[in-house]
Length: 102
Image (cartoon, rainbow, N blue to C red; front, side, top):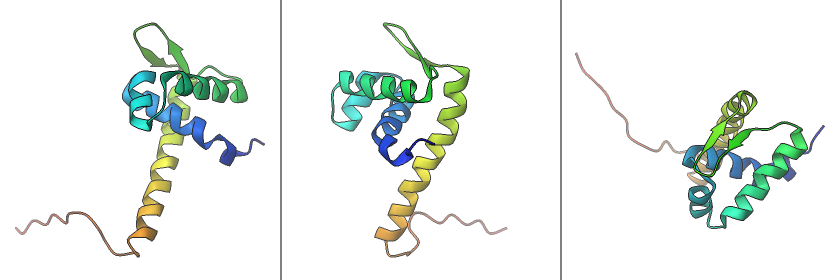
């Protein structure tokens, strides 16, 4: 079993690359270089033994495996962020509450 905690930088790079549609945009978002993002994603693919992204000079496209992996990993990272936000806010509700009276 892979130690997922050692993979966090790779997982974040993968999800950010998908959401930004490029290594360059992901690098800007994560304050690093496109080369570092590309290497992290390649390392993740190597560890998993599967290609997650099809790369061209102009775009990134998810493979079938990449799509399934992205859906699970992005959800987990989002939940981790929400857990952090909950603890930081002291468990107090945050955000907007919309109500409608009929």
